[in-house]
Amino acid sequence: MHYNEGLWVDFVRGLAPADLASKMQVHLASGCSRCAALVTSLAAVEETFSRDRSLSVPPDVVNRARALFPPLHRRDWHELPREIASLIFDSSIEPALAGVRSSHLAAQHLSFASGEWHVDVQIDQQSAGNAIPLTGQLSSDTPHSLVADVPVQLLRGDRVLDEVRTSEFGEFQFDLPYERHLGLLIAVDGESKLLKIDLNRSSDGSTKNEAASSR
Image 1: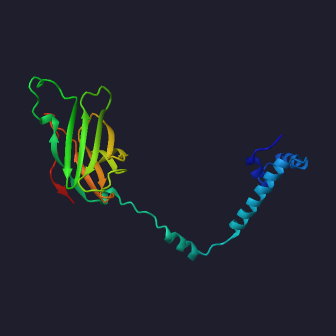
Image 2: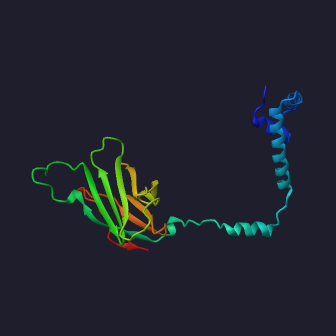
Image 3: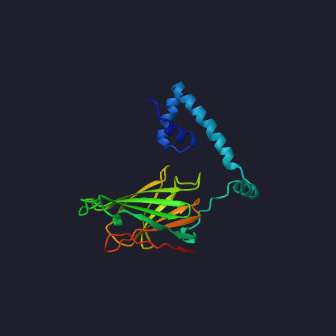
C-alpha cells in the first residue's frame, strides 16, 4: 500500500499521528523505492522552507519591497464628481405610426448624453416576471475611451440595489424591480467621475431627467 503525497508531507514535517507515522516508517523500511523517492524530495523542500522561516528580514528591506508595489487606492464613489446625463431621446413619447397608435411598445428606448459620453437604455415593457429587464450600452465620442469593465450601479434613491461591469462593448444588464426612484451611476473616465442617469417615470409613462450638473 502506497500513502498519498499529503500524508507524506505531514510525515516529513512531523505532523502525522504517531501510529500512522510508525506504519509509514515500516513501509519505507520495506524497500518501497517510489515512496522513498517522494520522501527524499519532500524532505529537501521542507529543509529549504525551514531555512527561509528562520530568516529575519530587516524592516527597512520589507518597507522598500512594499514601496515597489504601492496599493491601488480606489476612491470612494461618494468622493467622485457627478454629472447628470440629459435625456435626448425617449421612444415612449415619439409619435406612433398610423394604424398602431393604440398598441403598446414592446420596449422603451432611452438615450442619454453628457459631454463625450452616451448611454442607450432599453426597458422591456411586456415582461411577465417579477422584474423588468433593462439592457444598456455605454459609448463615447472620444476614440480609445474606456467602455469595457466599467462599474455600473443600479440605485433606488441613494441605495445601491445591484452593481455590474460593462462588457468589452460597453454593454450591461439589470433586472429592474417594480419601483420608482430608480437610477444608474456609471464610473467613467477611468472611474474618476460618475455619470448619473435618472430612470424615474412620470404618470404619463415618460422618463424624467434633470439636464444639469452637480458637484
